[in-house]
Image (cartoon, rainbow over all chains, first blue to last red):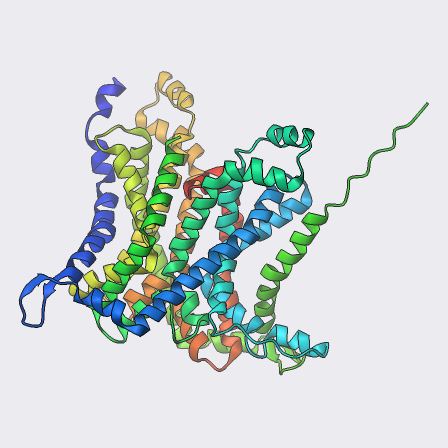
Length: 282
Length: 274
């Protein structure tokens, strides 16, 4: 009896509102953005196919600089995230006890600190005359060159912000590495690094890519931290788009910049969605 | 008679190093903010504030813009969370339990929002809101924040409904319970805690949501995080920001305590693709 009931479209009705909302506010804006930037009135007022806003972006040195600083920040953040989170995740996977529990709690903690509070804490600690300067001064050392308002400001902030999910994703991937396979490798005389390189990394390469994709998608167009901690010029794509849209009041060029960020992230986005969908399907 | 000496566990040096470094990198900055919130005078280069006190709490809480932002943020988060629960929970139940055409593709289509860089997507949405005159309005911000909760509020409850023991439901039905009674007495108590965690996280997430509120809401709508941005950018009194940070934190800590179970579990990381 249940089977005959279940083919009825009741389900479709129940999911209709969120699906329509998603179609209207996620799918449609993306197509609309692409459409509006390539199909619009030219100088003579005739509507037609034009790439002029893209040509402008890639011929404007300021835009190019912003794109470059964004690529640099994203790359550096991804690298640091891996260097910091992979050892933490491996340590957590193969230890038990009070200390690993504490380390895990700390590693997840930034998830519960809004980036706006992080930005404020960053300025108080690493900013000019911040806590680090105070401590250095008290032991007679010179002040640091503050990373606040330099490209390193957003890097530090965003690495801090992204540690929890990166560790969680890597840890989840490490779940598939069995203790036996490690012990077997140890028994035949493999060193620590060899175990890491030949046993662990190949098994979690997918998780590593997922973690990187997730971080890249978040960092490439991030707004709050670059806006508050980064330099005014060149600025990352997030603040750049915000300024073009809000202050310069130029929606077409802002959308063009958005579509360009989509293009740079599309490979990571597709890979990420594919992996999540495959994991859920299991 | 020989006694075997208990082998003392080796000191976990790796763990101690990680714990020490992470404590400094993660707890220390927050402690500094906490100290600033209860400081009345702290002149460089003193290591310890010269005078502690609550004077700036009174001043911060006496500011009309802080109160306005706090009420607005609470209103927004409540409206968004209620709307989100109202439309997402039935959908989650349908995804978990009912069979209908296009079920999988629709279920995974909610990932679309995560396949694109978020701020770029916000700009594309803002361009559409510009034509609809939704920029700077309460409902514009509600819509943008509502979209942000969709994936979360559907996927976690779906997992909750799926983990309910079907045999108990069938047993209840066998002894004569109606479908509503089964849902109320068997399904909900099992799925409830996870769903409550999802609702709580969506409330906290909305409360802290900054970028949508900043891009869509300004200048009319000033939520707490948006106010905090302006405090960071152009407020000379350091303590206002510190007090606001500590205030903003309360919901976060509550969420941390209640949501630990969900986040510690593997389902959460798998939801992010781990």
